[in-house]
Length: 421
Ligand code: HAM
Image 1 (tube, rainbow, N blue to C red):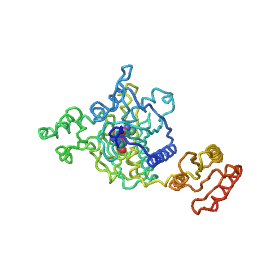
Image 2 (image 1 turned 90 degrees about the vertical axis):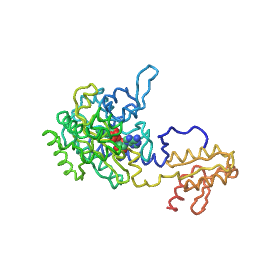
Image 3 (image 1 turned 30 degrees about the vertical axis):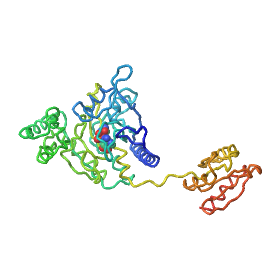
Image 4 (image 1 turned 60 degrees about the vertical axis):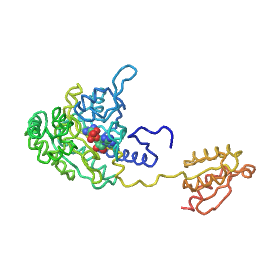
């Protein structure tokens, strides 16, 4: 079809899929509220610095995937690629910071990444996420996982596995980083250029590598969990115990470092058997105790997750069909338009779903539209009905037709619908 098409990597959310996404958000928000989370919304664009400093300038998200532009005032702004840095900023810039800690927040909305478009991978996509700010108790890590896990169950998503790891903290991670460097050093020459760069700038990034040369080396690479300091190790054990209390099974995955720099200690993703590889996780999250300081605020621990709604909906069983308009009010001649509009408004005030069709198409075409849309009843107004001050009401399933005065139409509809049900 000639004409301007939508930008690559974007999608129009047509009514059925939008309904599925909204349903997923409604279920998620209600569930999160049961655990004490309150919804907030942050701006869709932020200062570029928020993500460069928060997500990290060695990550793919910041290096290659941000939609960054200068506004008319010359400020560098970026369409948000994720919601965690914004949530931490909003916490500090509002009265939330005065509340008793921890503060539990949830959000949903569009995110933007200049990613390679594919199945379940878009340049504009939607996330549902939660964050807990202000406390570093490991049980909170398990709590956010429990919210995510129960949410997927409620939506009917099956075939998922929880991948769990601890990547240590500022104390033990340098030792792990060095071990990675030592391990890959002898193989540098045969590695992809991008991976060599990753190793040089942020060695942990190598564990996300999709390049075959490096991926084949990953199995025998040093594991984060072998390098944890005592504090990180005991925190991780508490996460595992709490997950058991929630009744959630997990798979330990010592290669899971995640693509964003702000994480410390717990990291996790949920994978689905139909989505291949870590890039295609349903959701991801972890603890980010250092993020607040990276953004220039006082220290404030945090943990959370975000899920890709397009992916979740892709793997959820289809929703029941949306409720269709029940009544169509049709003008058999253009002269009946006014009465059609008035009748439709009258019925809507009574709470019915009504589509008005006062236009000039033929009666036959209008009847066909009503049938296709799954209408139960059609109210017809033609020349004869106008002259007599009535409306003809037809039940589509069996063709029964009765005449009704305008002021008695609501009860006529009600009796026709009761009989047909
Ligand atoms: P993330 O792993 O970058 O984490 O993204 C979370 C989820 O967003 C992914 O698991 C995936 O389902 C979805 N997603 C990411 N990129 C795309 C894309 N291009 N198309 C469709 N879906 C996508 C974060 O964003 C962190 N802020 C999560 C978090 C919250 N960590 C702590 N709190």
